Image (cartoon, rainbow, N blue to C red; front, side):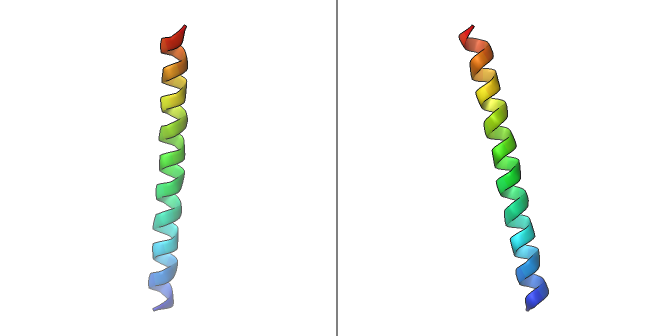
Length: 35
């Protein structure tokens, strides 16, 4: 059971990191469009 929990935590962490990168990319695009 423990390896499954660790795998879930890793996947969740990867998703958070991916979401953070996409959010920053979106902010950068918004800034470019504003100028």
